[in-house]
Length: 548
Image (cartoon, rainbow, N blue to C red; front, side, top):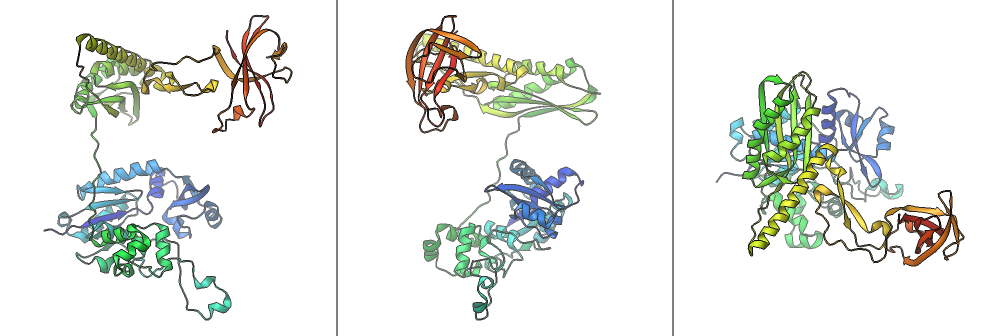
């Protein structure tokens, strides 16, 4: 049986070097990525120039700027880094088809039976590092029998004999005791990565896992920082000191995670490399021999692309919720148009109708030579079979057809105004007047069925409470002033007492309990006024609605 071999590639400067790649060599000063942690800006990733200045990951940004005033920073972008790592994973399939991401900055590759294609493991490792160096990326690789051992060697090779800070350093003791005690060393907290050494890639020979990872610190076992610090305080600073300990006592003292990680690194407990799932692309592309620019030619290209795209959707039993139309002009500029749907769609006619609305607004420039149609957002299409009485089945079918027509209408309007501009209201379980309903996107919600009417009459127009000049008494005023007008009260109906939600701190309800009144004035206005009894804010009269 062939011995399994795992290649771990670590990109210690992934975020910073990705940002520098986007700048295309315009930044030559020390560069770093700043992230927020516990309300403080810290350095999460640094360039090689920044590390030469003495900066380290995890350092506060204000301290780093004091050390290196010419430091240039950019905010962290975790989604962009994850997408870039996925691109690196797909590109690394040239080494082996069995590859997985180790987020946020690593790749794991099962190279069993693949190394001889590159001239051996050493040649494969050097080739991978060389390829990533040409991309402007710093990569450190390691090969071992297990995933845990390869991960440890790629990140901690060259750190043998460097103990972690365990809190009892002799440098922190008084001068009198320092002279009588043995000198202790400390370097850094667990999980803090040192300055990168050159040529630290490692290859563990088959069956030599203990010799390879034994001198490494316990942080190489992928343990939490608190656990590594606790082990260091007990004198267990390297992996070889943990290997000979009984597993039962180790698990009882530090938990199952320490024993599990140690067994995984040593190969006692299996840990396979789970390859990333490849999403099915729903896209079709057309390369034109001559540039086109007329609307009818663009529609003709869309007619060529729609049948194969919809065939793939129907074959996968999925429908498109968003369609993306991309054009590449002859001047190498990309033009994009998107449409959304209120329901999953796999029909050519429905998609073409909405795409035709976008074609007149496309800036074709001097011509288009590539057209690409894709469905980036899809959902499963559920086929419904009705059983029972024929009349019942026909009624249900007609209701479903009516719902589809409404959703298609929403999609057509949304193609012009945007789907987010089309909303509908749903009832909410609250007695607060402004919270009795919620606004939801019509394309992503179903119509409200069984809307319960309010127990008391509500105004046709509801607006934020506005102060009313009236005597500060809970009795309806005979006269009051609102919006620079004088009103005379002819009749008042109420009160309807509404208390604020005690479990929420709503700034609009800090005036305490309200007594609502329906007041009709001599000039014909029918207003909805309330008297606030006072709380954190003062009491008084307010107007919140108009019955029309």
